[in-house]
Every structure is written in C-alpha cells, then in structure tokens.
Image 1 (cartoon, rainbow, N blue to C red):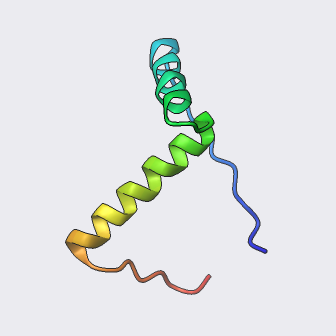
Image 2: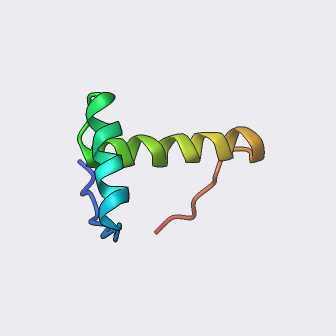
Length: 57
C-alpha cells in the first residue's frame, strides 16, 4: 500500500467556505473535492499532452 503524503494548503475564509459548499453539494469532503479537482487537472493535461512519464524514485 502506498503511503499518502501530506499537502498543506492556505485558503482565505471565503474561498474555504465556498469550497466546503461545493464539496457538500457534490457529496465529498473538502479533501475529497480537492483530490477530485487535482485528478481532473492531471487527466485534462494528459489528454492534451500525453501520458506523464515519471522517473523512478
């Protein structure tokens, strides 16, 4: 199982409250919503530019 990494994100209160609203509307936690948006961003990027090949760590 892959260990998940922590990412700290600073948001102003209005943005956080709006994100919480959208998250709840879509049935996700704020973290789940952020992950959904990140994954969608990566998918859109790969559709336009091709698969991202990551070097071995």
